[in-house]
Image (cartoon, rainbow, N blue to C red; front, side):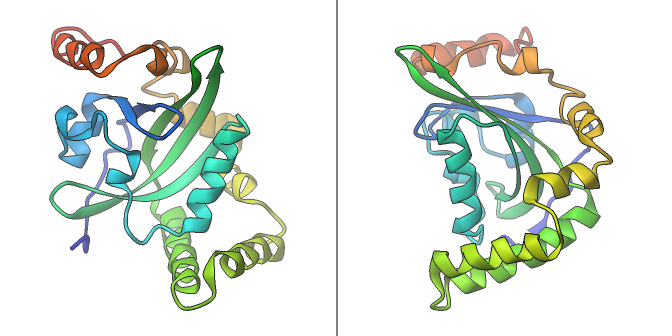
Amino acid sequence: MFEIEKGLDPNITLVCKLDKNGIIKYINKSYTDVTGFSEKDLIGQSHEIIQHPKMPKVILDRAWQAIYDNKHQYLISKNITKNGEYFWTIADIHSKIHENRGTAIYIRRKYLPNDIKEEFERLYEVLFGIENSGGGEEVAKKYLKGYWEDRGTTFDKYIIEKFGGEKNLKTYMTSEVSDKELFSVDPTDMNIDDILKLVKKKKKRRFW
């Protein structure tokens, strides 16, 4: 299970929108095409449904802390499809606090180049091993801190450098779905019935 890697088209963008608890409120067509899950499979479910079981907790905790702090971030993640394949992506995550409605989470995912994938594949394997062999999350966190210190960089700086600078990375992440399109609908305003109606309509007209 999850031993076969699924290739991704670098030109497509997977978009999902979540509420503050990580519950999926919206996904675009590329999301269903790549994962094999339908809208009915995903909407109303935890975003963890596509999370690979060997994703290190220390990495996920880092992502959630940035969300709680309302900070933009990049995340390298290993994901799964409905039929048991896996795929790697770079995710561009934004969280926005909406008055009286809480936090909305907006995520763009794109193909992760092989050279970056190979390094993170090794790193995540070590972190997952530490977390599940008695070391626990605290030891994994210390290892991760030392990993970046030894390289004289940070997680975000490393990603930006690998893409040739912040401008290049921004261009890559927004090449198909702009920020305006990403933030066009506030998921905290939508209930499940509204979302399912929107899903039916978008087959005739593109909303994002």
